[in-house]
Length: 278
Image (cartoon, rainbow, N blue to C red; front, side, top):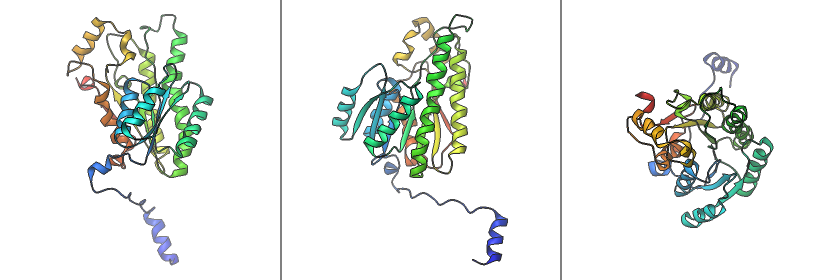
């Protein structure tokens, strides 16, 4: 290339990056065959529904748990869908344990293509004037710090591969303030997850995508703290008038995990029955 040509290229800025090679069939775009997914907080609830959906889409899956062993569930998924599934015990707020678990998964599966930072806890103390400093610390460690720990380690794997998809479970509570319950620390934790993910989407744009899913009220054990009267209030404020089933979220995670979303990063998909727009 001549000196004049190089000078002209400098004047017009960088050339665009290469286009991805995409399947022509939309069913193949959404397929996860040949990919490895790691999902925190996946022994039950949203995480387990996502794990099963990824198995159905053909992925090998690493399931994470802490207090509820799920090796039997992993074995059942592997047998039913003819994929590799293993369960790993890890305290999600322990940065050393998180790093060790991710590196062990990479060793056991050969790589990690998709990482879902889903583990989290709820706030049950209402007003922050209550004596709840330890609960505040736990909410921030499990909901925010854990996402950072996971991202920090898996980013090295994605960067080495030159690609990857990181998905964090945020919440509609990161967008709005829930009523009637008072849960300022939880809302703040999920707002932090949203902005951390957006920031990482820019930071990792050269080698991985980062997106979030923001669920509304979902029928999981995490919401067992709420009385029926409180749940009635939730239903009345949700235009669709109910809580969602965990399975109603899996399409959002599958989209972000798959090649159907190769030009999507820094995005958040709210799945809340219309709560945020009402």
